[in-house]
Image 1 (cartoon, rainbow, N blue to C red):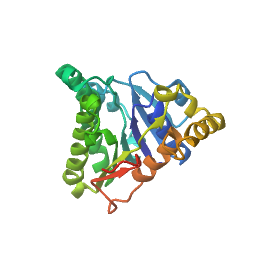
Image 2: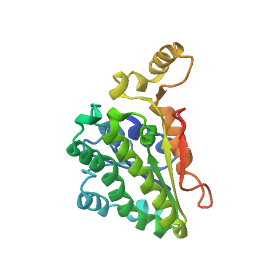
Image 3: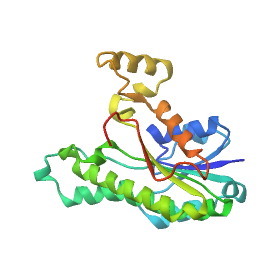
Length: 243
């Protein structure tokens, strides 16, 4: 059976991506600090709790994976992250930037380093990064977050070169605004009711600007299933902002 590793699966995009992989017949290893009891009830989901900012904790969490899971590992989704509250650029502190880098870049680096040996052992696979259009730097009040997401793009492209000979592709999804508990109190994740809510919310803008996490998850898993000779080092931008 094919397997996937997804970070930040306690809620939001990460949880939706894990669900989409399960729907497509994968076994899924989810890594998060809080865990996800609902996903853990699924027979093909392994719920691992770890602080991905700590490289040793990530390696320790993955060390106990069974041979069947590691032999089938073909996709890793690097979703874990956090966004500090916006503030005037003149008042931004390096501490807030450093925390954003730890949450958005260190977490990805640690997971790449822990999982690439498994992908190599299988003969290839994919690394799919969840980025942000804020990396373009157009929102000064969000500079700490934007800078960390720009660094994440740099990491993705470095991976696309470093692991090309290992038949590992690396790409990034920039989903734009997504309806999660953080943005709309979870309404965007509540089945048909959530879809209707988003439809009403977006109708005033005549756009599909705000998307449910389930829609983003389909895009992410589509990219994660790219073949070894498929696109790599690319940013797939769904935010409707010029990259």
